[in-house]
Amino acid sequence: MRTIDHLIAGHSGGGASRTADVFDPNTGQVQARVSLGTQADLDRAIAAAQTAQPGWAATNPQRRARVMFKFKELVEANMDALAHLLSSEHGKVIADAKGDIQRGLEVIEFACGIPHVLKGEYTQGAGPGIDVYSMRQPLGIGAGITPFNFPAMIPLWMSGIAIATGNAFLLKPSERDPSVPVRLAELMLEAGLPEGVLQVVQGDKEMVDAILDHPAISAVSFVGSSDIAHYVYRRGVEAGKRVQAMGGAKNHGIVMPDADLDQVVADLSGAAFGSAGERCMALPVVVPVGDKTADALRAKLIPAIEALRVGVSTDNDAHYGPVVNAAHKQRVENWIKTGVDEGAELVVDGRGFQLQGHEEGFFIGPSLFDRVTPDMQAYKEEIFGPVLQIVRAPDFETALRLPSEHQYGNGVAIFTRNGHAAREFASRVNVGMVGINVPIPVPVAYHSFGGWKRSAFGDINQHGMEGVRFWTKTKTVTQRWPDGSADLPRGSEDGGPSRIQDAFVIPTMG
Ligand code: NAD
Image (cartoon, rainbow, N blue to C red):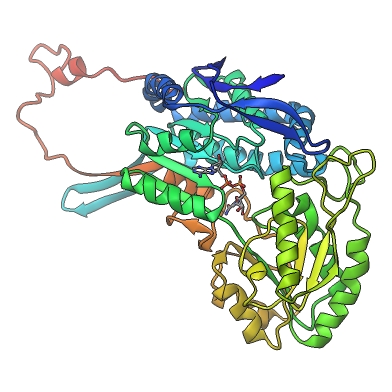
């Protein structure tokens, strides 16, 4: 049986007394084991990071960017193999797996421009003969703790910016699909990144706690479910670290009476069911405004949902594949039962779905609920599966209140042809990322990603300039150079070298 291990100081291995099973969600069988690391494994990685980081921080930004350029080339050359590896542990279809890698790679493209974004601010003449300038310096050693659902994109969001800004970075990937993060770290080494700058430590809560408490780690970036995000935030901040911790989501799509319903149905097929609903920016709640809109939307949604093809993750015609493991499948089916028990109308029931020849796989058919109400637990909580809920709203104001008052505030969308309604909605809704006729409004890499309320703890977003701010600290210099400084003569009497020239050697660039 294959063991997926740490990547510490450029080498795979280290082993562990504890391991976790890694499944193939298509077959339901264990395909590998992942080491669950300890404090001692983390200490080895920290020692390697401490050795490597000062030299990396002193490497000029242009050279650091060149590693990013080379890494991008290598990931592109290995795209097919990476996508298959990702899909085999996560269960998302190959096209989605490529999207996962591509969206991460876009942050690497942003990181290729790091010399430009690291330029500081400068004020000439802030006072008489006084100039003020600022510079951004790396924090030292940072760590990233990532979820199972984007095993390429989220590690690249964090590591790309952390490394390009001169930090050493320790990645603790999800133990459910840990292979791609290791492979990406190997490609970074191949791209010329010095050993110890990017390392992977495998593990579960024990490793996470060791990271949160380790005094040598200055910052922790976390993405996962909200209760764990809140815990990571509290414990990391308590230990004096900078922490950003993104949590769960329950994103709403508001459908105004003037929306193009065919477009909405096409968008919802992807946004609610793509990747089996295991996306923090999925759209699992649709809010039609007015019963007429709701009835028309429901009539179009039913055949579209029944036409969705659920298949193995390598099936190019499949709309989506299995969920990640048996426990998650059970959890999603339990939520469907809760919705029924609470009185919602189950219009399409995806429970009990079996794929012929893959009866042990973790497949769930698509489900549609109508007449879901805000007091239901199945509405309040994140299901994270292929389940779409219709919550009917009588008017715009009620529709606006639903996502605004929900405990999560990651993403939201409005579908309308009315610019005024869209503008009003975007400015008033209490949610971090808004789509206008865009169902999954994940910002491009040079903007930043982050939700509100229980979808994010801490106040700095992922990637873009927010990412640069998270992974650097600002130093501000106020300088004055009085004329004719007495103790620094301009040159010796006989025209020989001055003391200043003796004292400083000007380094070359490039
Ligand atoms: P998870 O919270 O179970 O795991 C995330 C990470 O935390 C993993 O690395 C895991 O090893 C670690 N972890 C798990 N239990 C822990 C514990 N008790 N103590 C310390 N660490 C622990 O999340 P998941 O199931 O892997 O991912 C899905 C969740 O992530 C969903 O809630 C989804 O909405 C969320 N998510 C959010 C975003 C966002 O940007 N807001 C993006 C992707 C996923």
